[in-house]
Length: 257
Image (cartoon, rainbow, N blue to C red; front, side, top):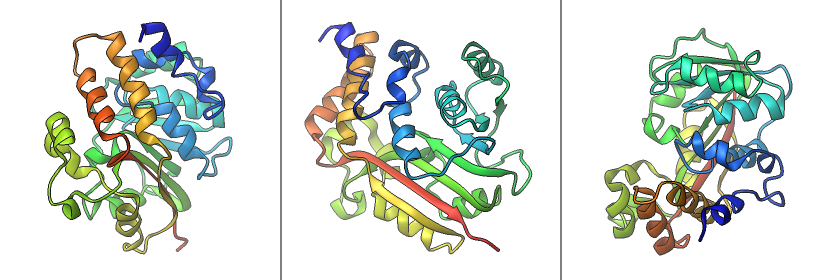
């Protein structure tokens, strides 16, 4: 597969009409996780994002999802990430023409520097698995949502729990090791959130053919940087063929009162 073909595969207007308007080379240049705009566009179908909302993009990386939120939904975004300098992200926002609607903040997910009830929505793409699986995390995060506020998460998921399988499947373990312990089924997430009685879970699903989207992204990354770790991800996904791997897409609303 040539680089051009790999890039062209990232433009899919039939399935992702909004994302397909974005230059895939620009998106790959901001790579910190697989197909973030596809995930966000799919997830947003289960959210109600309206112009003027204040949205926390938690684990925003180099800023692609924050640009998308501001442009496509007209929301005001706080882009919070621990690893990317705010100055670096702010440059992306200026170049994309959304600097007036997106603020870059360096923040650790367990010590968020925001006032309680200061957001209408929290969105997290390709990041929640690193900080959000602990039993007490959702109760902490919900404090920053206004009553009735929404949370939406897209995170690598499994069709079956590793605990039920008894081990991490070999083709996955060889590539990501223990990291797969944080990849859960949609139903695991539904229970984890619902049991708190702080939110009403509005959707919890595995992305349809999520492994195929992930594979298209990994192939494009591998073509862009031959010899890197992306080829191992390609081989993992080709071996899996959707038996275990997908993405979990979750949305909920903070309960009133």
